[in-house]
Length: 282
Ligand code: NAP
Image (cartoon, rainbow, N blue to C red; front, side, top):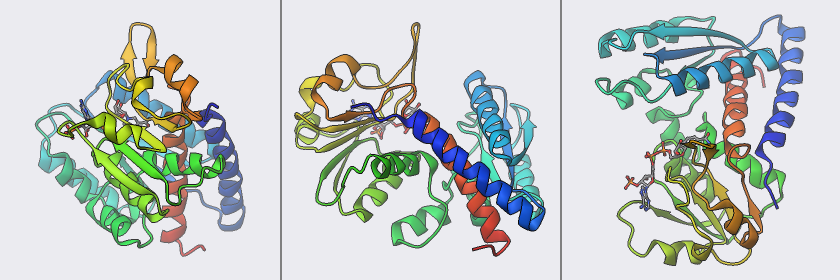
């Protein structure tokens, strides 16, 4: 069965649109997101455009802050601090990756925790690990929404994540563990990867390599979440050899139309949450 992330993202965005309307009717203001883009990487420009369009759809205001490719760390951090201090801005998104000469971690940590709608700063990451309320990274949260929507019970299940990045694997590890799954986190130094994937009720793959996950690597009836977005001559694909893996899996996300649309929907959800927290609306 296909896990239709696109349909779920549309449903979430419709709900958020109503939420923004209600906020506006009651408080006469709307959440506002600042999207910071350094340089002009073509893929990043597309992502920024998609995020801004999604904001417009649900009624969130957005502003673009476009900085040149040769922006210094100091100038970037100074811009982020200005946005932190700007009371009209509720959420700040720093589009990644940054140009190579910039320190991504240091820049992410500059964003105020209460405006860190990507949930990638150290305070929100720490909150996630300690089980305190905060803003949670959008892609892992989107995956959790899929499990909820399709009533996939995580309790006691073996989940194997092939990724240990701050964007995907690490936050997902915390979220799945909080739902009582038994989680294995794999990476490029993992020995006998197949042992870990074959043992898993749920396999989440985010390696970024076409046909990386083959049917012989999963057990019958496994749930497969394919996070990767790989650009090929024939369009986008994920890690999974979709034709063969989908025959063996009980559930699988397609690429495109799986996890990707949910990432944007969750960014909007986080922006509304940040707005509410800042305005003491519960
Ligand atoms: P990343 O930091 O490069 O992570 C890739 C991970 O794969 C790393 O943990 C790496 O291990 C692991 N890996 C590489 N080769 C491996 C191998 N042979 N065996 C086992 N593990 C291996 O990238 P990322 O930012 O997390 O993104 C991963 C993919 O997800 C990309 O395709 C990206 O486009 C996609 N993505 C999609 C969304 C979405 O919204 N759908 C959001 C974020 C990312 P090491 O840590 O040892 O290097």
